[in-house]
Length: 217
Image (cartoon, rainbow, N blue to C red; front, side, top):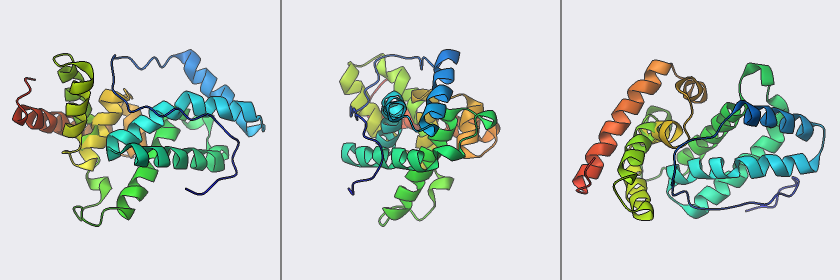
């Protein structure tokens, strides 16, 4: 991957095997995002490092859940933060949360990646498939309580890959990343009703996949 002229930051790669619930997103953390963005725009390199450190795991988790590839997820995560660095000035605090802006940017990059690498995939576009994401993740979380941690996560990750990109995306954003319905709607640029419909379909499809693997839901 080509070297990019952005401030250095420490990257922490770890394949996401969730062990607990709860996003921990508080008003304090949201305020911290806004303060970091302001400091980044003011040219403070340490603020950029803090911003990357704070959000790398979330971005990497989304990329990994979608691609099921550690190396692709690492490359895509770096691409995401390159885009963040180039486009941070376009973020408007009064128009939404930074985490929504970042997730939308990540999703758009995944769409571009999907289009570039879909040679042997279904011809339908990722926009018509993204509902599957959120529904997969919810069933995954319920199943994890009945299986040994890492084994459960591996089975659930495999199940996620059997969903269409549309459903997989929705399940990941809701059940793994724990975004609110309105936030997911903003990321996907669809009505909240569409988000809920995709989530229901994704969860149901993931449950069928796991049952075929003889996992009791």
